[in-house]
Amino acid sequence: MKDPFSSMDESMKHFVDVVSVAATVGTLIEMLPSIAALFTIVWTGIRIYETSTVQRLLGRKGGDDAVDQ
Image (cartoon, rainbow, N blue to C red; front, side):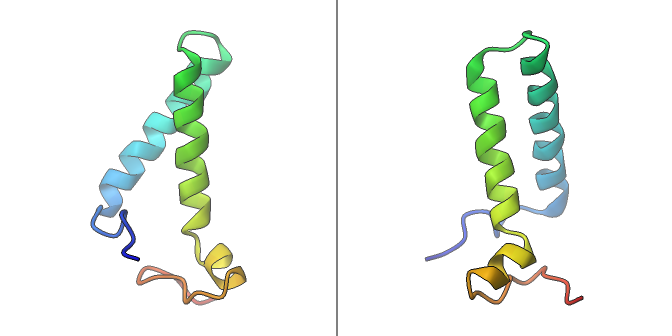
């Protein structure tokens, strides 16, 4: 199965990360609806899933941008 986020460049991922954090803050101060919180949870889960640590735990290589430590 092809990774749907492999075609996104890093600057776009960082932008969506910023939007995700803004959604979290906005939800915590009750300025945004609950759907923003759901988006944040899903996006954060995706970002955690694609880290090299989680990929190693799942027995995958870790992707092209994985950093060996």
